[in-house]
Amino acid sequence: MREKQWIEEVLNSTNEIKQLVPNDSLLQDIEARIYTISCVSVKTAWMAAASMVVVVSLNFAALKFFTNNKQEATDSPFYTNNQIY
Image (cartoon, rainbow, N blue to C red; front, side, top):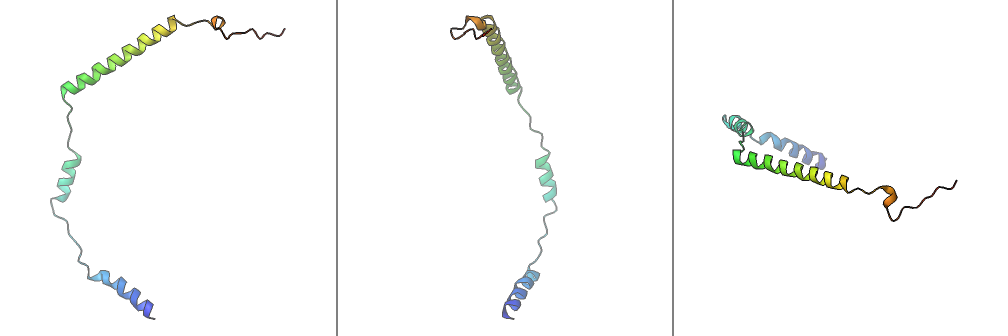
């Protein structure tokens, strides 16, 4: 009995809490923060483009270097002829 009364008191204690009402401009402030457009400077954009060009150029140079210097499978010192018949 005592436990049920205590539970009821706890549950009823929330009835005394005053509900908060947000400020009228709060929604507008939140939306303004969400919809702000962040601009990237022209210098940063050009630096990113230049770095991508450098990376792509290095990849092509490495690809060309390694395909020209590729050894045949028979040129390998570990190559053995495993043909049984």
